Image 1 (cartoon, rainbow, N blue to C red):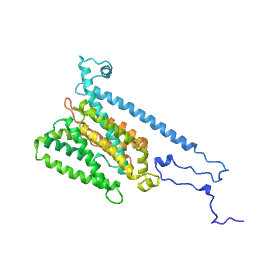
Image 2: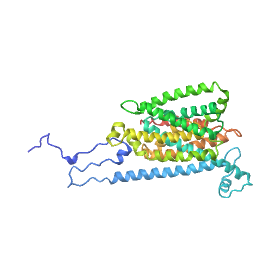
Image 3: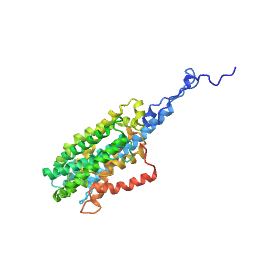
Image 4: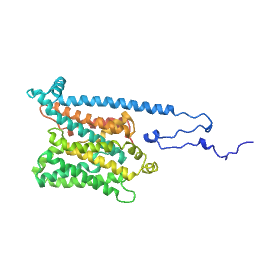
Length: 384
């Protein structure tokens, strides 16, 4: 007898379709053989082997990037207005002689290199997390009003309180960045849908414009404030000492810990809010946690070095070409690649016009802009 077309399908032939994403692919349920439980099972070994191979390849790439970063740090200690050899750098670090002028130069460059390392890690992680949480491929620290809030706080500190040193700027910049981000998130959270990516971007852009207007109103009325502020505004890692670095490091460490553990969360958000909720995520809570890490990192980096452009924007796109779309890899790769750009830009700025120096904030834009244009021409920006 022929089987009718409407006969019930074998339940063992049904498969579960999960939206394509790195997290979903790793947790995907493999279809069971149509033969049922008694039939030959379809093995998942090739898929597991493929994932293992991909992880090992990314691990090797990440290790290679760390080695390159160490080389850049050595170059930062060696090159400048007074160049030294790598042998002298190693000797100064392992067997310091206070009477040796080259050793003193190398030791004096250590805080500058540490600042570049910390600022790069913070901006790279913050940029990658910001693009993920806002699902905006053009997101950078400016999207939450962080740079504008920090800049306005520094201007007010100079104009009203007479603060004139970097150590004094740092706490005002940190506070201004945090307050601006909180205001943006509070405005974006109004309404039934909560803080959606579009509302975050719009609130950040509106607040940034308003804060910039207030800042310019103060600057045009006080030449002294403008003279003091412009040296911080260009973004630089030179002239930083341990009194400036050490108070910020605990905050940056907390931001790194928070952000590094958001990889799976960002993978879920990349599927869209509805799908993320279907996968069990509390979208509002996860976005708020990620935003806290972003604010700490951006505030700390901006307080240490001033607003440095292009790092948080270009680095996440660059690392996606290396490790793919999985945020569990994008975040650590960004944390290694961003210091490469900051330290490399600073070294180039030191040697390009000796004995003068070009601030790192200017050099990152000069170096990052062509790279970003090349990435855009080579492949379309990832839709987040």
